[in-house]
Length: 342
Image (cartoon, rainbow, N blue to C red):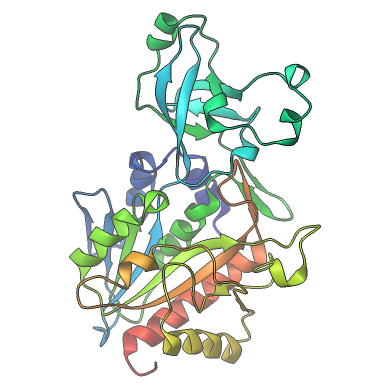
């Protein structure tokens, strides 16, 4: 069973790229009783060594990123409004009227010119980022500066629900972090290295330094990936579907995945009656894009959860998909670490 309380704590923590401290502390406390060693490297990645029953023939690293998309304060206007830039790729169509939290303390709302003051042609367009601001209720620059400084992080308001589906802020990629934590808690057949990486959303930066430091032979990127199985999207454009199992990628915009590992994961899923699906687009990317190019090259696989509404205030994943990931990941990891397959 999924540990939804763990997932709730991870998703509701604040941690845009570069400010992952609170997420890292949650993870550290969860894995300490089970880890052979834990290190925070200069980039902020949490690197966890987990002992198994045997030494692996293939040194395997599993990665999930701790950071989430968000915003950062860049200017305070004379009337106390906060101007901002996005940290990571956010669709600005979701921003108007969205509640946010500045620096983990101060609630605000993203605002713009009222709709009844817009010209007819403006109503048909998404609002440019430069025309948006964050309203924290300050009436002057001085009042805002008493609470907020330039460079302060801005997160979407924490949200989590475990009803028929799991809905929450930052499921990308706190769901991947939770899956790795659950693996570390379990008994493993082989020694493995687990990396909870920083700054994926701004260019795969943490994974690049972690992969160089760990020097694995092989890696699995544990991620969420875009599901577009919603009304109005043609079937061939839906990429993957919530509830249809873990998603295996053959290629994205950053990586051509190891073909043998791709086939191995499909084979293991079939042998154990675990539902899986193949990502039906060459789109997006994840930390594999940095990991596979590290040092002399790393054989890389991505296993992802289908997630609707990535990089928005809340995403949606399936309970069944999460359970299938829990079943599939250790089997694939052990097969790779054994060196006997692929």
